[in-house]
Image 1 (spheres, one colour):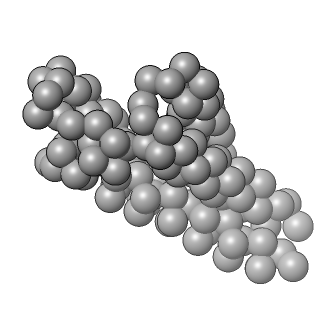
Image 2 (cartoon, helix red, strand yellow; image 1 turned 90 degrees about the horizontal axis):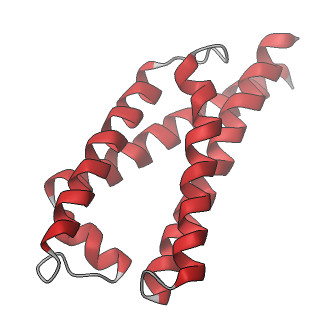
Length: 133
């Protein structure tokens, strides 16, 4: 179980890093693509492209940091994922409840954020459990 827990934690961290890298790169370099996934058009809202690019920078940095972190559960990047991803999920739920995105786009945001929360929890708990034994 110890080795299996470490493997699951390892792959959860890697998966979370890759997801962050892909989504961040889309937001940074192709905000129109990410906007369409969320059901919004950056062409009709010029400030939205800027906001998505800012989100992209942050997200790329988080992804790279997670990929470089290693499986040490005491690494601040792995531990901070437990704060960052639930906060992102809460923001997505607020957007859904307030109708700030089209319903389909808000659901995509909530689902993506929920997956990231699960991966962050697995990366933390399972690497910690794997090291403790």
